[in-house]
Image (cartoon, rainbow, N blue to C red):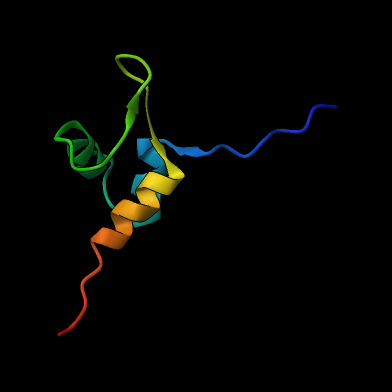
Length: 64
């Protein structure tokens, strides 16, 4: 039996579930170049987990 390897990528839907926001919010960030992504075909978009973590850290707000 073949073991399934954990993916190094998220889909837009994965990220929307992680952040608890609507799919359209993440899609907008991707299509407007705010969130780094790979466009594998016209409809297939993937975001590297490492790129997502870096992007998310850059959005952290610290109280000054």
